[in-house]
Image (cartoon, rainbow, N blue to C red):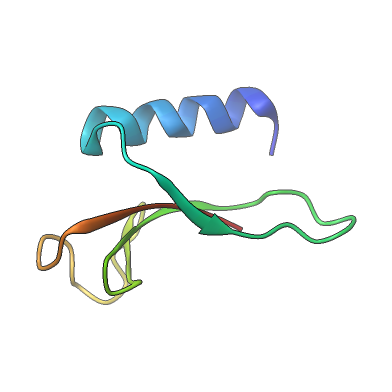
Length: 66
């Protein structure tokens, strides 16, 4: 992921969720950043996908990088 892509993604998140914290994530050697998600306090992804159908059920925790 390029810096410009990350900035654009974070701006989209900020518009939707406000100025939330970056709460976690990890990068490994020789593996670029590939996913940015918003998680709730239960650790479930609510953005960009809501695979567990939990969006809106719990307070937003922050942004998670992978």
